[in-house]
Amino acid sequence: MLQLPKTIFAPDHTGAGQTMVDSGTQFTFLLGPVYTALRQEFVEQTKGVLTLLEDANFVFQGAMDLCYRIGSGSGLPPLPAVTLVFEGAEMSVSGERLLYRVADVALKGNNNDLVYCFTFGNSDLLGIEAYIIGHYHQMNVWMEFDLVNSRVGFADTKCELASQRLGM
Image (cartoon, rainbow, N blue to C red; front, side, top):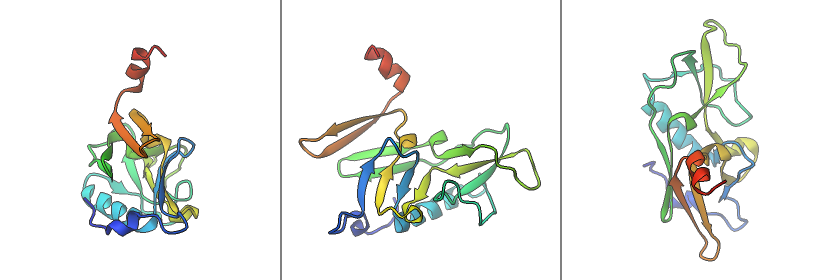
């Protein structure tokens, strides 16, 4: 659990700092201080497992500044899960949903390496004052919205199985 003050997650009087579930946004974005803490922890937990992309000028899609070099054909190694904790609900992001392969990036030196970027970004770099859960982290998650009671629930699922059972 990241040691962050609870106040960092509370929206201010203007509404900045709210959390949105957005199927139109690809990745998940966190406000600067939260992103920085998560980024540091992920880097620490993957030392010796992943090789950082050492290019300070490379920022994927304007806000994804944590990228790695991974040998082609080697696949992704086991990665630590990231769990988003809400009042009464948790959403776990793990495995291949943590890193996204950036297509068509030419690397200097070893041309067999591929670039993968962390699927959490810094919303401050986008000029957005909100936490946004993008559709990449909504894949294979059953989401329930209780509008009457202002609650949301998450459950891991396999979408292809759910659609079969629901006759879709």
